[in-house]
Length: 362
Image (cartoon, rainbow, N blue to C red; front, side):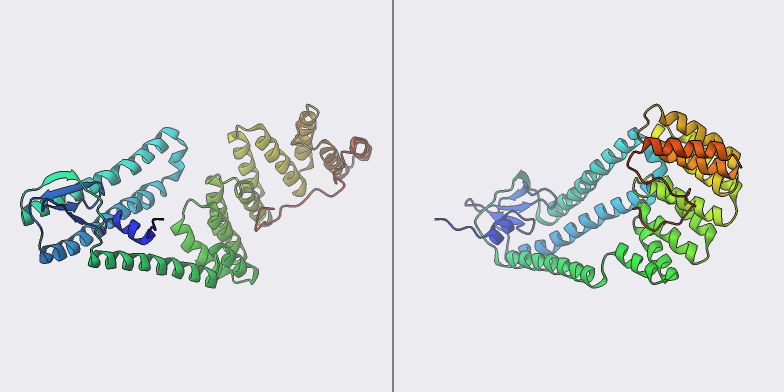
C-alpha cells in the first residue's frame, strides 16, 4: 500500500517549490502568483542562480502579499467604513464586491509582469508553459517550506494563547464595566470601534461606559451610531438607551422628537407599533397622560385586528393606569376588567415601566 507524506505533497503544490528540471535539460521557473504557470529556459540553472532566485521570489511574494493587504485596508478603512451609510444601496454593494474581487487580481498580474521582466533581464528570454509537478524534493526549498509552516503554526498558537490569557475583547469590556472601570472600558471600546467601525456592539458598550463616566452627550452620540448601523441585536436597545439618557436629563422634547422621527421613517408595521407603544409609556412617565391616552386608543384598536405583536390585555391594563392618572376611575376599572377577561396567560398586571439603561439585549 502506497504511503503519502502529507507535508511533502503540500510542498510539491506550494509556491515554495519554485523550479523544476526536465529530462531534456530544461529549467522551468514557477510564476510567483500562478502555481500552474511556468517560464521555461533551455538550460539547467546553476546552484548560485537558484539560490539567488529563491531570495528574489520570496521578496516578490512578500511584495504581492503586502500590496493586496494594503489594497484591502485602504478599501475597507478608507472608503467602506467611513461611508457605511451609503451601503443601503444594493447596486453599490455589488460594485464594491466586484471591485474588491477584481482589483487584487490586477495587482498580482502587474507584479507578475514585473517578475517576468526581472527574469528576462537577468536570465534571458523564456517560454511560457505549464509548470510541471515533479517528484523531486529540493532540500533547501523543502526546509524553507517547513520553516514557513512552523511560523504559521507558532503564530496561531500565539494568537490562541493571547486569546486564552486575555479573553475575548467583548468579555473583557463587560468585566471592566461590571467592575466600574468605565474609563478603561471607554478606551477598550474606542480601540475596537476603530478596528471594527461597522460593529454596533462597540458603540453600544462605549455608550454605556460613557454614561456612567459622566459623558452623557458622548453616550447619546454612540447610541445613535449603534442604531444607525441597524444591527438587529443592538438597534432597539440603542434607541431605548438614548431615550433613557434624555429622560433622566429631562430633555423630554428631544426624546419625543426622536420617537416621531423614527416612527415616521419606519416602513415595518410591527416596528412602528413597537415604537408607538414605547412612546406611549414614555409620555405616561413624564406626565403627559392625555397624549399617552391617544396612542393607547390607537394601539388597542389595532390589537383588535389581530396584531400578534400587540398584546391586547397588556394594552388594556396600561391604559387603565393612564385613565387612573387622569382621575377617570370608571374607565380604569372597565379596562382592568377587559384585561382580565382576555386572560392570555401573560403576566400583564405590572406598572408601566420607566425607561432603563440596558447593557445587553435580553
